Amino acid sequence: MQKIVNILNKRARFDYEILETYTAGIVLAGTEIKSIRLGKANITESFCEFSNNELFVINTYIEEYSFGNQFNHKARSERKLLLNKRELKGLARSVQAKGLTIVPLKLFTNEKGIAKLQIGLCRGKKTYDKRESLKEQDTKRDLDRIKKAY
Image (cartoon, helix red, strand yellow):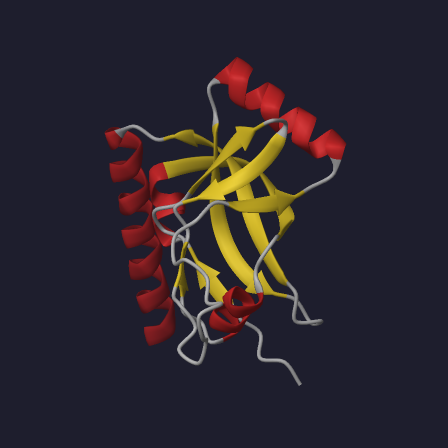
């Protein structure tokens, strides 16, 4: 029985307006997947970039495996994402034409124990949009408290 891992990028939902989401496979070394299964990864500072018609996630932190030997992985390195050709072409077109960005939203393992990365095609929010979303969260929290009291 595999332990399901969910590592979220909460900062992405605050800083960006998410237009579309995709689930991509990620190419990992042996010790990287072991660290992810232990929950020792961070995707808050990471972003995605195209290189030779391939999509890479950059600046993702996966802690070195504590039981690894000299074959251990580097903590921060480029990791290739696996998507369909059609999805890659569509993402590349929208990033170049519309000035959008691709941001990792969630790193998780599926029921087979395979690591997947949920990425989002995003547009950056302005400061007034961020204030608006904070107000919405506060009002929703207050309404939930009132409902819980009655």
